[in-house]
Length: 536
Image (cartoon, rainbow, N blue to C red; front, side, top):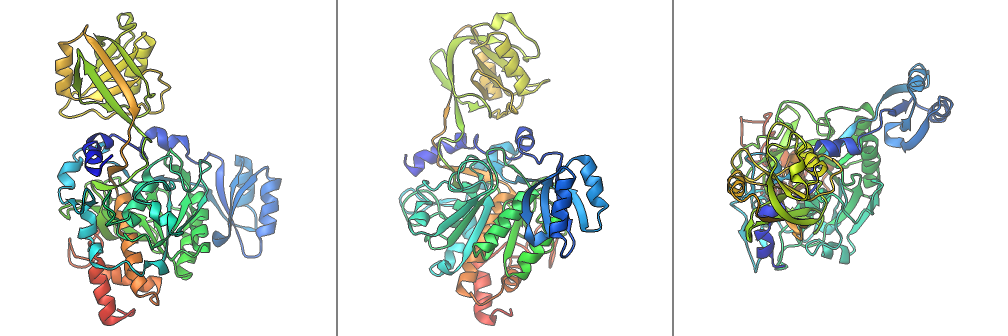
């Protein structure tokens, strides 16, 4: 499929993917209630290991840089260990989530308004607006082979045509801590999207450019998230430790959670002392709360901007924000056929539709039936396609009631302007379900009784627009690698300092809670180092 054809499907491709912030995703892989972190005092690792086992617990992983164990421990065991003279502290093993979502899931952030500066370059290749906005294209990436960047995320699609050369050049390694697939596969799409922003091949006549576009940058992929987009902080701790052990200079984390962790901070303090630059997403809650690990002073916290350099409404605002980068409607790579497209025709006429997230991939044809708001079962829907208006109850309940009434498919239309993009939240439905617009719904109400075909099929798109501080983070990480490659004798602290000092100021003079020091600027950082050296 040509890139232009792919882009023509991206309106529907923004129906896709990784709903990393959906309720069902968060619940599916959240840490178990008995998941704890037990930190031991100096020289007491063996003693605490024995105490955990004696308390009926199980050691899940060793966290050497935190001087701690991740454990499963009954409540009585927690109290016993908290009282132990060998234990420094006991804390919950808290949740970490991916912090990027398809453009369509954040109201008002649809692709065309914020990606107007994307450019088609050679052939059908697209230069995403963020590559120019960060000045990345004006700094050579010919030396990036001397840097290694670790991406802690949901894996990477090694077969993606815009990422494949990184593999054929032998520049990608990885670890899988997710319990799903392999590190070079991606059941979620988030990791592949992040990787594309960092390292999609440029000047190859297809797809998109990454910040580092010559497939020379060394990558290490630490896969911690499966399709649910949720993992434990201890998994992230082990992942970043493996990144450092693999020789990473930079660790990019498009993830976070609202709960701090003493053990996690210990790990990032250790990495800072080892000379590793760690960069994380500021969070997507659109308030003044803090997300971690971005909230630790050892980690660079990245806010999101749109194509007009305006602060993204979802990007968290707090004093930990250090720098900003494009994070609204960012076009990048995704695995094909991972998510679904919705298709609808009635009386031989096709209508725009979007697959419900969680719908089975099936097709059904039957007479269209007015199922109202879908708040109650209706025997009249048996053997028919249910036409349902949004409102009062969840999409999952509407579709389930259609199914229980004998309906063969469900079409839910919006009660406000625009396309309806819905999720079933993990409900075990067995009929295809789609959303459509309010105007289409009004038309379809006049076509009840006519033959309707509803299909949910694989989405072949290999590129999509995502929103999130997750999308801003790889811009900063990629720029850090790009600039550092020209000045490899600089320390991580010095690279961090120059990125901040050379950032384009966007808010109040100096550092502020919305933008930090401002928009990351690759060429300005390069020029500053070239003129003043690592001491900048």
